[in-house]
Structures are given as C-alpha cells and as structure tokens.
Image 1 (cartoon, rainbow, N blue to C red):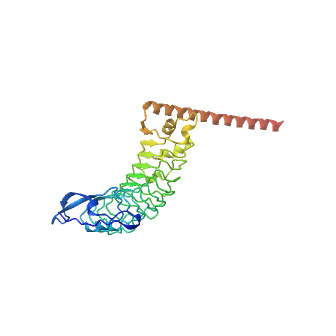
Image 2: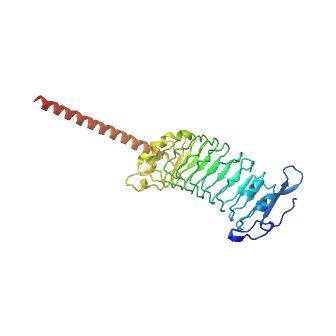
Length: 323
C-alpha cells in the first residue's frame, strides 16, 4: 500500500483548513494503474471545512474523490490526478474550473459541482465525461460550453440562466435539467437527438414552444410552475410525437373556471400516458376526444352562421340599391 502523507496546518483568513491525512478517509485498496503495487483508490472528506487541497497532488492513484460540503475555492491541484473516475465537489466555493485543461482529468466519468459559485458553464474538456451536475450555482451563460460528444446527463437547475445559447451538439445526452432559472424561451437549443427527459419547471414560459425538431426522442417534459395562462400554450406539444409524460401543474391556467388541464392537453396530444404524475385513463381520452369534436362542431356552426349573416346582409343591400 502506498504511504500516506501528513500536513495538518490551519489556513489563515478563515478560508478553511488544509486537507491532511488525519482528515482523509482513504479506502478501496487496489492495484496501481501500472500494476506495480497497491494503493488506496478512494478518498472521502465530507463536511470538514477543508479549504486547501494541495496535498492531493501526491495521491496520484486516486480514482474516486468526495470532497463535498467544504470550503474549497481552488480546484487546481486536481489537475495532477490523471486517473480520477468520479469527482464530487458539491457545496464548496469554487467560482471557476478554467484551470482544468484538455490534458487534465482524461478519465473522469462523473462530475458534481453543484452548489458552488460558478457564473458560467465552461467548455468541458474531459473526453469521457458521462454526467455533470452544475445545479445551484450562479450560472448566467452557457455560451462558452459548445456541447460534448459523450455526456448523457447535464443538470443546470437553480441557476440564473435567461438563455440556453450554447447548449448544443450533445448527440447522446438523455437528461437535461433547466428548472428554476429565468427562462422564457428555448431558442438556441440544438442537436440533441437522443434527449429523453427535459426539465424546464419553475421558469417563465408562457407557451410550451421550442426547437422540438432538435429533440425528436423527447418522451418526458416537466414544465410545471410556469406562466401558462392560455390553453393555446399546449399547441406546440403536438410536434413532440414521442412525448408520453408531461408535468404542467402549478400554472395560472389551473385557477381558471371551467378549465380541465388534463383534457386540454389530451386534445393536443392524445398519446400521453401520464399527466402531472397521474396515469391517463381511457375514459379521459374518450372525454377529451368528445370535447374536441364538440368544439369543432360549434366552430363550424359559428362559421356557418356568420356566413349566412353576411350573405343576408349583402342581399338586403342589393335589394335596397335596386329600389
């Protein structure tokens, strides 16, 4: 087993304590990458007010790291750890990861940077990254991101986004979470051919429109707690032919008399299997179909009546002219 190193110094200025051997919980003894010996591959140090992680530069064989709930600001020392597979830095004070270059963290699969102080979603150079959590930051722009070829899950909920520009070119992304931002449009979302689940809850959407051609496989949309005030807001959903689950609870539309949101949604998209977490019944589908047919008949009758009134008025005018 590789030797462990000491270094327990309290940092000045109230920025936390320096990571030391005493604070580390090392586990999972495994062979080194080259197979020449044995070493610890997992490190956990959660909620211990850690500020500096400089000592990690000596632990080159770590593969799984959990440093959540600390006071870390500088993530630079992690650049030296070439074999890390999972990295949890949630609930720290990191405002930038620009120190991570294309040469760093080449094997990282899982990254959690939720609840930090990032203001922009950066380019993610890690070539095999599968899941990334940036929720609960202060991210206001994704323009520098530009996509990722391997990422399957991206979480950006509870940030300060007003635009999704930059969320493009993710060919295998299956889950995208954008809840609790300041979004009113999905303009800019591009090239997400594998997206299955999209969360846009607790934003400012007045209509459920979007570049749906870019998300042909979308089957689950959470649009709850948005600014939907008219049943026409649901009309664009007809273009989501694979959609089967929809959440729209918490919209102002719910408070309008005589409005049954479930029926209104089913009129637009009869293939839905669940609305607001409740299974759609055959009876609801029949009721929605009957309601829609009634409206079509009423509209046709209104048009006929207007046309008859117009023709009668024209006839009366012609007769008056002849006299």
